[in-house]
Image (cartoon, rainbow, N blue to C red):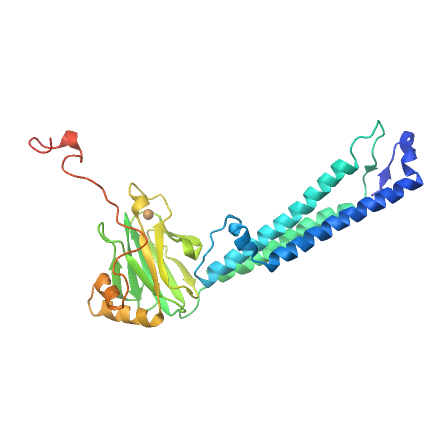
Length: 323
Ligand SMILES: [Cu+2]
């Protein structure tokens, strides 16, 4: 059973119950309420402007280019604002207690326990907050992982040590055929050309070890697995044309850091022309030039080994070579 009494006050300091104290406590509660209201007003003001931009996205990368990236970004910003609101409230309470109940003489402050409403509040409030965060996380995650029946474009992403191949497919799954392909080499960065305003399915597979497909502007990474596992995901729309660097985000070997590619987002019309040019046998660079795009990657460059006859394994060089 829970005792009804909420305050246990040592009899030696009962003078604290003098009439004037009630008024002081009332003023303290008023100040606390004012602080809370001020905090809420500040948050309303902040949400009125672009909170994410004001605070540099709270560490989350800005400038997402897919519909899914915007939803993930919004979830992150909302979670940060909620965490800050709770933080400001708790810090306010702490500082208020520090000041209000600082030591004044030898009198023991009010000892509060078995306060049922208070215990109920600090049990229920965190559960409510976590439930709301969980609810929105589940919604956004389901949305990001959602696969449509008939995406407009399907690309097979093939990773290998240490480069990428992008196969444009005529359907989904391993049964579909590749209608055009782009393969990266040591000298040429592979450029993955995709259209705006169309749904795109990525089907990932690796030829050797685990790699990870990462375009920072998509705001997430997806591991590329070897074997039978085909990691599949979709973006429902890309909404900004441009060139974006893509990287391998899984430590896969010696040249992992140089396993870059470029995502080139173009208009749907240009994309159709690019694909037709590829299917007629043109190289990726020629097809890009034909649609008026830069033929080579703009955001990254091939790894320059700087190896020459004189600096490559000089100790084991056959006699008569090098110096
Ligand atoms: Cu890799």
